[in-house]
Amino acid sequence: MRLLPRDPPNVLARSIAAARRSAFALLGACALLTSPAIGAPANALQSLRVDTPAALRHESYRLWDGRAPGSTGDTADDVPSLTIYRPAAQRGTSPAVVIAPGGGYVMLASGLEGSDPAAWFAARGVTAFVLTYRTGKAARLPTVLEDGARSIRFVRTHAKDFGIDPSRIAMMGFSAGGHLAASTAVYATAGDARSADEVERVSSRPDYLILGYPWLEGTIIAKDGTSQYCLFALEKQVPCLPEDYTRFVPTRSVTGKEPPTFIYHTTTDTLVSVAGAVRLYMALQEKGVPVEMHDFAQGEHGTGLGGSDPLLSIWPLLLENWLRAQGFFRP
Image (cartoon, rainbow, N blue to C red; front, top):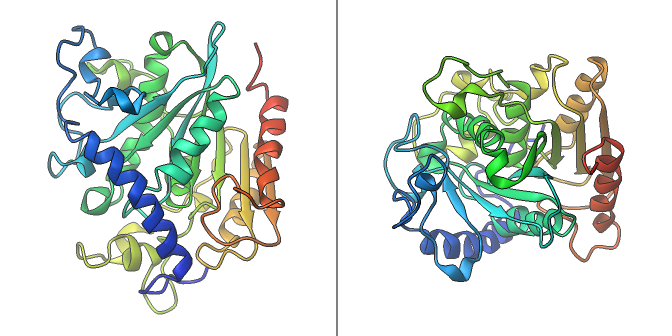
């Protein structure tokens, strides 16, 4: 995989700038992330609800009551949460998807890779949850991986409250969020039935995995002794020894217990090589895990759902057909 330069190319700068405008608008409105909603019912779920302005129209919930494990503070970067996008008309229980936006573990592309796909799923009768996971100093591995696992457990635990089917929970991730989503699936655990925390009693394994140009091998040490993760995700923030993070490579940890997987990538992505996605595809296939991959010939990094590109914009349709074939949309 190609090493990330210290000065990211213009495409990344544009993507980050656009995403920051969306993310900062949301984070500014949600400055009270550490406090439950005033006057909220005193039950396990409502006590975690975030007090957000009505203009945002979407409910948000903190993943932990109190500080998250490994948290370094109480700023928005330290408080993982889920924002819900509900279907306009829901009949019975719906499938669900947890979406992890990209952003190099530095920030979150909450619009292009968060609210946009969430709205796409909601329009198809799926309850979507956009995951705000820890970034910056708070995201040092493996801390952020706990946010991914907790998000699946949280949704599954409160499936009845959200009106969803606990056996049809997908996880979708883009770029660095793809690393988080893939890691959530690959390193999933069954849960601890004896835990005092009801959320920790259920499985963290998503039932389906969807990856968009995933940054899967950023912690691999390059020939010059550095890693993408240390150069980009932790650059100028905390000391980083590449050898401390080599175990967080999902392409090398496939067990065969992973859920059915769909992968979207582009060959000309110069920021995240398609090679990692191909290796994950091969590893899953060798272990007998149902997997489908679509590698488009042209397309830069950070294309989201494809936008106005007539070629790339068909990949969500391919995803929808795949999910339908996998039973995700069953009544």
